[in-house]
Amino acid sequence: MNKRLHIVCFNVPYPADHGGMFDLFFKILALHNAGIEIILHCFEYGKGEQPELNKYCVKVFYYKRITGLRGFSFSLPYIISSRISHQLIKNLKADHVPVLLEGTHTTYMVKKDFLPGRKIFLRMHNIEQVYYYHLFESEKNLLKKLYYWHESRLLKKYEDAILRKVSYLLPVSQKDATTIKGYHSFPTIQYLPVFLPFQQVNILTGKGDYCLYHGNLSIAENNKAVEWLVNTIDTTQLPLIVAGRNPSATLIRFLQSKKVRLVMNPTDDEMFHLVQNAHINLILSFNETGIKIKLLNALFHGRHCICNEAAIPGSEFSDYCSIFSSPGELNTLITDLKDQPFTEQQAAERSSFLLQHFNSKTNAEKLSALL
Image (cartoon, rainbow, N blue to C red; front, top):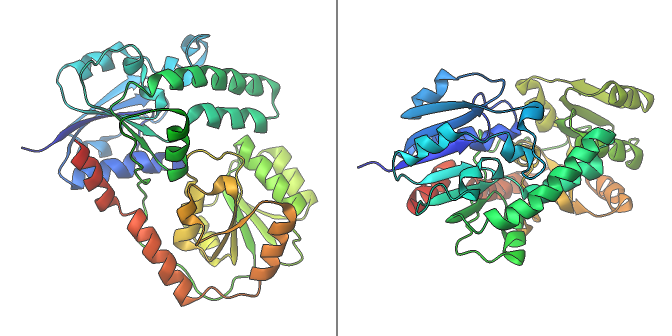
């Protein structure tokens, strides 16, 4: 008899059109290929129903997210209060199949103890209280800043209580697993690497002629990273290209004033070629929780990779990235690497590491074993 699993997603996981969706969709695909029968539950707020999901799931349910002021609460974090669905709880109660909750966002039924005795897995994409606090620190808009502060404060209290109620915690990074173990006591925390669309390493050897920073440029933290990099690095060593989605008018003007090339809303193919042909991919983060898909994209497809400590999801990555902790160290690393070709041996060593850790088939088997 095939194993069954409820998966509750905080958003419709298809199309997987940005990094945050990769783990959701490609986990479903990998579990389906491993013979798991999936009953999928999605909160919908803009994507609509997606028939493609019916290929991989025996049932798919959609629930409207309660957005705006109607979903706001002074006692619950908005990411939870806007996803309360009594129909979802009713559907989950219809059997005793294990439940995988994607993100703290989907845990209201655990908070209220609506599923006693069930085996419940919580996939932790971030430590949300930490994630929202860093959003608060990066945001310049006062109203958004207040919202992120309010959300972070509520999430600390909420996560401290809720994490003790699930059967298994499945963080996406070793760093998050270590952090959680440091301030909580749980029976089972199992690091489960992120599921990715790419399962082959495709790196060009030799040299490129530019540094690249890429990311979603509509996010305040990424704007802060771009401004910091532009004001820090010596672009006379290697020119800098910035690429990403939906840059603000302010960011566009800033990059124009600094004579930095901006590639706005590149296609997937354009982004792939930018990452692959760069001599150095720069990964800068001010938020140390979760895992940065842009880092994995750079490691799978790019040459040299320079990161700060917050961008590294665990010590196991330190052999495959150059890590800086100050502006001076960053410029020194660029100087050291700008004339160094990326070698076949470096590509082979990185490939071995990535395919060992981010093998979707193997990681789906690990999760299946827990069922």
